[in-house]
Image (tube, rainbow, N blue to C red):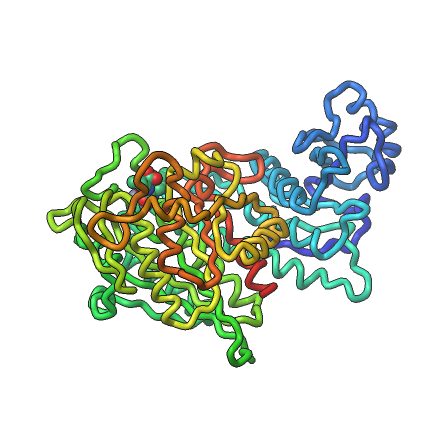
Length: 495
Ligand code: BES
Ligand code: ZN
Ligand code: ZN
C-alpha cells in the first residue's frame, strides 16, 4: 500500500473516495465539513437531522457522487464528542475507513485531515491505523478475496516549514509494519513455527533490519544451566531456543542504561502433563505472542534508532506432555540458582521467563520489560480491554504507563504488595510455580517473575487476554492484535 501526501486541495482530488471524520456536534458542521455541506446543498445537515449520521464514534455514512467534490464517494466516519477526542481515535478512524472501503472493492482513496489535527503526530497515527487496518489473516487461504488498497493520499495535513510530515509518515509505517510482522508470527500454526523456525524468522528479520542476533541452541542452553527453560522443553521432541537480538545506538553512553525486552515464546502450550481441556486448545499457538511482540519492537527500533541500547531475549519452546515431560512435584533449578517446585506444568510461561530475565541481567540489562500471554486470570481481572501492567519500582511502571497512553494502548496497573509473595512459597524448594490459596493468579505469576528481576526496574505486561481477539473490530481484523508493541517502542524512544 502506497501512502503519499496529497498536493491538491481536497475538493479537487480525483479519487475513488474522500474520507474524513465528523464530530457529534448536534448537526453543526465546521471547517471543511461546513464547506462540503454547503456545496452539497445542506445534505450533511439533513443526514444529521434525520438521525442517519450524528457523528457517534465510528458511525459511517457513504455518499456517492458528492456535489462539489472531484471524488466519486465521500465517506464520513463519526468521531464522537469533540471534547473526548484524542489522537488515538485517528488510528481507529483511519483503520475503520480502510476496512470499510476495502470490503467494497475500492483501491485508492484520500484521507482528509481536519482543522486542529494536521500535525505530524496526527499523520503518523493515521498511517498506523491504515497499515494495521490493512492486515488480514488470509495467508493459508488458497482463494484470496483479491481486494487490495493500492494507495492512500493524505490531504489537508500541515505541510508548512519545519513540519516533519515525511518523517512522521515513515515512522508510522515502520511501527505499524512491525506490528503486522508480529501479528503474522502470532498467526502461524504451531506446526509451521516450532522454536527453531521462530529463531530462523528472527534471524531473517535481524538480517534485513541490520540488527545483531544470536541463537542459543539446546546445548548452549544446557551449558548456561537454564534449568527452568529446559524443564519445560524436555517434554517435546522439538528443541528449545533462546533468541537474543541486539540494537546498539551509534554513540552509546558509557555506563548508561541498557533496556532488556523479554518475551514469552511458547510456540504451543498443551499444558504439559497438567494438560489443558480440548476446547479452545488450538488458540495456544498464540502463546508465543510476547516473544513476537519483542521481535516486532526490535524491527521497529532498528529504523527509529533510540539512543539507548536494547536487547531482546526470547526464550522459545513447546510445552508438551511427552514421555520425558516434567511432572507436578518436580523440582527444577533455574539459571539464577533458585529452586522451583513445579506444581502445575501449565504454568510454564513464568518458568521460561525466569531464565530469560536472569539471562537479560547477565547480559547487562539495567531496565527490563517483559511481555507474555501469561495467565487466564488476567482476563478475569480486566477482561479483554486492558493489558495487565505490573512492575517495580512504582515510578518505573508509571513511566511506562505514560508511554501506553501516548501510544493509545489501554493498560491498567496491578498491585504488587508483599502479601502475594507469601503465596508462592514452596514446602520443599525456594518457590512454587503457582499461587497457593484462592485467586490473584495474574499477580502471583507476576511475583514469580519478580523473584528473578529482583531490584532491577522491571515492568511485566500480561497480554493473555489482549494479544488475540476472537471478534474483529471495525478498525482491526480478528486474530492477533499486536498490542503493546507501540507502547514499548514509545518507551524505548523516550528512555
Ligand atoms: N498460556 C497460558 C495462559 C493463557 C490462557 C494465555 C488463556 C492465553 C489465553 C499459561 O501458560 C497458563 O496456562 N496459565 C495457567 C496458570 C495456572 C496453571 C496457574 C492459567 O492461567 O490457567
Ligand atoms: Zn500454560
Ligand atoms: Zn502458556
